[in-house]
Length: 453
Image (cartoon, rainbow, N blue to C red; front, side, top):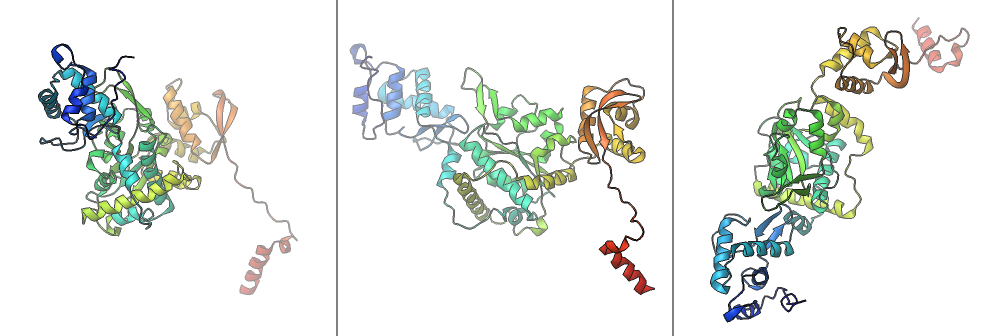
């Protein structure tokens, strides 16, 4: 290993221009060499750059985290920053190769990686006052129920888990439903704690750049559920929400790489029927009905107080997260209530209506897909249903509690098919004469009749 390779590159805040300059590799006539090593050494040791150039693990960009002496509009490294850094390094150390300096900036920034949300969450100290059970009612007038409280809790835990373990499995989407001006979007924006980490710019799921728009954001709002409703296929919606990692190339990379997700999704809607018609994918949605008439305050009445409240809300949930005693799924005892709630916000499926009407009118003991396709949906002119129609009919029948799925049954018109059988209702038999006295409630009824007579 050469002397250059073994030089100590550690930061030293006491380094002066003279000491740094003396450590630079030089060539003929003592000229400073335009090497990546020299550029990295200056960026590590010059007091101007110490802890200033950092890699943001959330947005995967280089951030400038302190004042460097020139006017800046944002924390992100921009062309103006690069121009000023190159000018400084050339004037001070004789280093002027743009590509070497750019490469050195990326290397040094990576060494000083940080995660702004992770650091923010870890810095919060909870004051011990429980806010989680009342937060949705406080700002949005949501009725306080076990389901509404659990929905916010699992959503916030999922958001924390995504930044501490990017790409972890989390499939829920919080959905705030209510009138315009209730503060739904503002609540979600304030949840991000910094507007930089919030976006509502996902309009279509089939947009090639939709995944890149997630980068650098923690709370992603789907306004009016437009992207969900505009999706061409239900599977597209399921896949987009459930995906744990996105593969794409950033402007600074040569190759496309996997980017584990660090965000969670929330939807807002003024309409009641905002969920996809296919109920198999609706388990991902957590509908919360907003009613501003019941809210304790509007979230914009006092922005400073609202943001402080939400920071303490995160501090409270962080205590739960640190304990490790939590789940990223809703409790099983709330699943039935969730399905019932989701049904309130799902549009009526014409196919399901036709099938239910047929079953009510004809009460067949056994049914199969082909039978329902032809007789319930009036497709007598078609030979066989398409696969998607088979899947849709099966899904509807699996949600009709009066029928139970069985392996096969032989139909006179359709042959042997996978089938559903109507569940038999409990049978009530007449009580034999002379046994009435053995039935307590019947005795009471008979006694009342005699007295009345």
